Length: 163
Figure 1 (cartoon, helix red, strand yellow):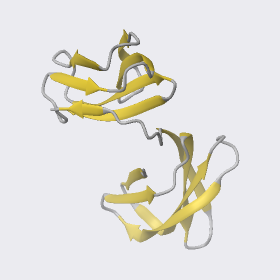
Figure 2 (tube, one colour):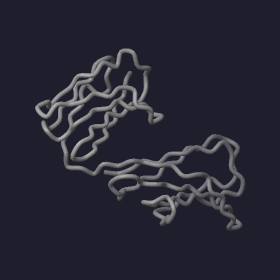
Figure 3 (tube, one colour):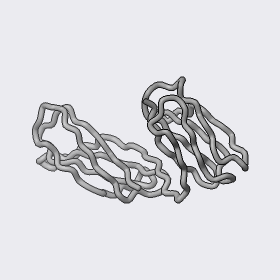
Figure 4 (tube, one colour):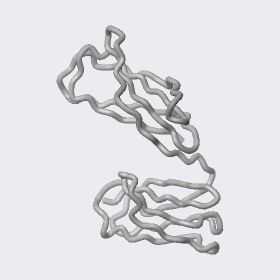
């Protein structure tokens, strides 16, 4: 029940800190934390921030960088869709090599989608009211991270890794 936000800098000059803000509508942002910058650096530097209280649904995250002189630069907005549902979905094996078994409550979902890391729907399967499991074949998909989205009474998104 948290969002992990990661970013990397190639170099930094007079970087005091990063400011992470969140919004439910993409317009009104509230600061949720700060991460100290490296000051001045010419090497790759990885950063991470955990949002331990995301909202259910779409969360908009904005990253700003503040120099030591107080000048702020906005580095973009990213969207994270979050399902804080009590629905229990089982996916296994995860990570997987070729096939993935998905178990879910019968009658709650009308469709199952396999979604690429870029948001593209790769497979769409209609579910009957009596189905409570599906096996999908990932052998034709490249190695990487995918998402399984079950839609119906609620929408639940779960991450799967193909290795």
